[in-house]
Image 1: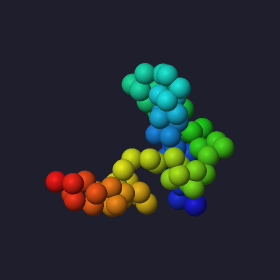
Image 2: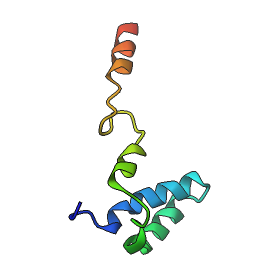
Image 3: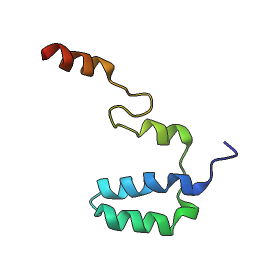
Length: 72
């Protein structure tokens, strides 16, 4: 935890803003400009739980891949 700095949450801030309707390019620039405060109210656990990309950390979805393979 000591190695985690606030700027590591800038991507989370940008994604949250994009989900709220801000164009991602604008959200990314704003998050980068405010990286020193991006971690306020955030936790590593919350950041990891927000990851929903198939194949990402802790979400391999191997059952879906096996089902797709079996359907071929």
